Length: 421
Image (tube, rainbow, N blue to C red; front, side, top):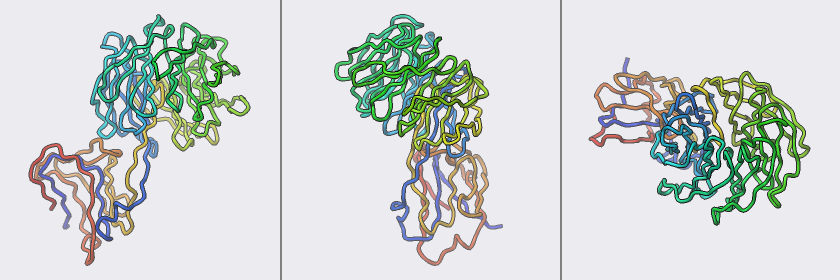
């Protein structure tokens, strides 16, 4: 059987390959497609699992620091910031490049960093340093230099942290002070302190910036609702045992609260403050909502992530990840890629297989060809050897009489002469 061989004398990461019958360059005019990934911190295995929300498959596992807990994503989705809470291992934040899913920097911060939030302009990251329930602070990281440029004293045991959409205020839940510190980002000083319930843990700000929802971990288990116009508590909503993580739907109509001891998620209707519940098969910690609001991903301490359908408030499935996942914070990453152009004959996406995504031209690995993290999802990786390639059966569709294009996304790791055969 004759074959088409695409051989690379360089060592390359090859993230997607397209063959289509149309004018050259047409792929540049194709409408963009969006892919979303959930970055889940595994506190017990010192790693981050990356879940493709389209398939609910783990497409990458990234080693980070010791006992990772918190997650924050830059506005451009190019960086993910992970808090490593182990006090014996440098108290650090790992900076992940989402294009390669590798750690590109490690920033030393305060004692026992727990949660993080990124400013809307992407220039600063605010990190709560828990410090074992004692008086502590918030570290401010300059994202251009990956260095701490300020340290802000707050209450005891700072835990959850969130920014208003305009970036002017940071809200910090102080667990053992039973209050929330309000930081002005213009001066990096505390401008208000708000008494809430017992042991406030997670918190989240609504998309319009008008409300902050604070989960109070201890009895009486409840969520405090703060009006940001005057920083006063305007409602207290009872929930089930030990609420921890908090997330808000993109339209602000629902607030999701992880009830750890109760193994459930509370669903709060923000218009009426009424509550419904979704039962889980493990204790939830952090949770986040997909950008379209259709799904909620909740990290379970049993080593899985539960995916909840927002329309029916039911669990669709669970995904195995690492040990003791926490995923505390906003952990959804959205990446944009090109849509298939018109006239496409074949597309090998490299997402953990060599299948043709639009036709029947399925390939097979030869030699040392393997999968590797790509710009969007997985990719093919070739080591530069003559026998390292993807073998594709011959087809009349690969012998066009008119114009055709071949496109791919390449990351050259070793620069040597290259050829396509």
